[in-house]
Amino acid sequence: MFIDRAPKDRRQFLRMKTASNRTITITPAHLLPVRKSGVKSNQDSLGWTDSAVQATFADRVVVGDYLLVRDKVGDVVLDRVADVQLVLDVGAYAPLTRAGTLLVDDVVASCYALVDSQSMAHWAFLPVRTARSILGALWPSSSGPVGVHWYARTLYRMSEGLLPESWFHK
Image (tube, rainbow, N blue to C red):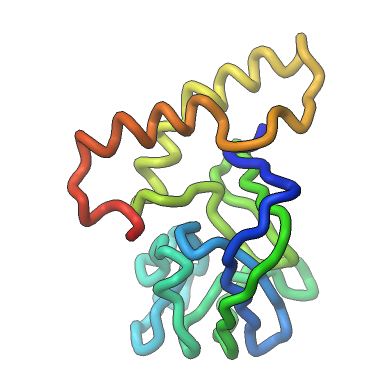
């Protein structure tokens, strides 16, 4: 299912290009797993298990930071951000996956936006992921309605009064 699906909307995005020529176009409020430049990484593990890789709003990523990308053999590796540009484009899609992450043109991205916590967002969407898993066998998947899913809209409204303001994208 989609948390947000707006195929005809014109929106502002950030287009990030990495040193190995991977490109992702993403909304500024979307979360990305990032290792900030100057932060030492645990060389034994990459990905979400690396304590130096943290979910970060896309508009906080700068040249020199590192994104997670899939390399030519399929491993997930760190890749330095070489360029960040603000662009206008048409069509916005935020699919919800079981893992809470997905590959967008070989760059790892979160399914979530607006709230600065990958783990909290993933837990909050557990009921929807579970229902979709159970009911998916009964109803074939479809692209769903255009706009923000009703469950996500409800979560956003509820969380505004419960979570600290600093957790929200501004």
